[in-house]
Image 1: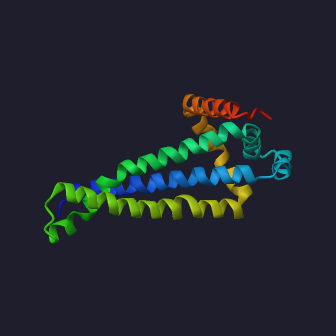
Image 2 (image 1 turned 180 degrees about the horizontal axis):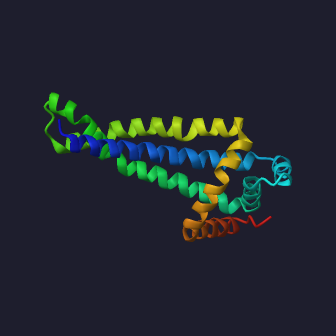
Length: 180
């Protein structure tokens, strides 16, 4: 048994899982922050809850933070697209050996196809549907949980978010939709 290959495959699968969870975080954040009611936050802010104050700030700048969530979701999805082929090529290697599939192109094509469907399933169920349902059912706790990390991510990715948001606003102006 090749322990180095096993450890390397484990790291690759961990990276896939992390990217799916990263996607789930941003999906839940987006839905919770557009669903949260001001009155829910006002009560907590009155009690000195700092996360509620951060969530209120985010809601006050919702266009920018929707850009943050979309940037996070897109980066996770693109990362998964890159990770698909090597992960499934390695996972399917024993099957390729048993079936005597030696063509590298065939192995790559099969790995991409299998990986595409498995990753699509994981991304839709774990990365999209479950976090959306969770955020709908637990809006306030989700909004409070995601608020601080979302602000950190916003600060780290600010140049990209600024470009994306300004591009979207420009596009909206081109079709006649202006600021509030």
